[in-house]
Image 1: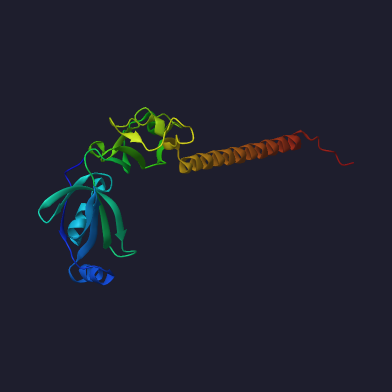
Image 2: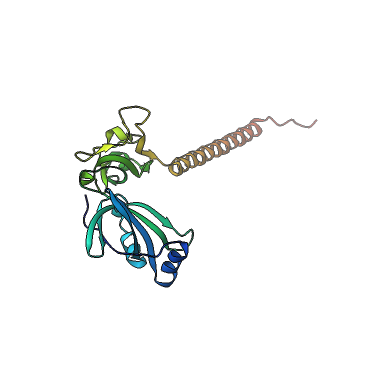
Length: 239
């Protein structure tokens, strides 16, 4: 569980879309709400540029972090985030209060390591990521910021599935990967289509060059044979 991320918030009294628009437009604030843990929901607002800075860390999307509200600290997860369709502006945020023993189901990012050191990559393969995050279930205190996936043992044309990922202690997949229907591929190493195309093009060029050389050799042989026939011809004496 991460406590390195801290967001500062203040309570707000104004309700409605008009009040939220004024917050965003005039004060550069983000309307928000925090709820859960059998406490009453609380309306909040946060500073837009501080939130933008915090959102640069992927950990905020999957971790438990601290929310400071009017001098008090609550542990929360980011439950929902509404963005403007084309402006770099956050429209609204939802936070859910959690305790250390609350069981959470969250998407957690995958961090792939040793891809370039793997045998498959050294033989010309390219790492193809099928999944970049997985859904896990665990108590809030065990929620990881990310899950590390080591690719060092992957050979060319190998595919690593969910069941082969080593999860942190007390963390489980939200689905059972021992069920073949849920044991999805995560990452593989294959020769790229571009490399295959280049090889095919080189092979075609080599075949064309070989055919052209064979044709030239055949023409040269035919020319020499014609010359010998003319030399061997016996001239006819005129009477």
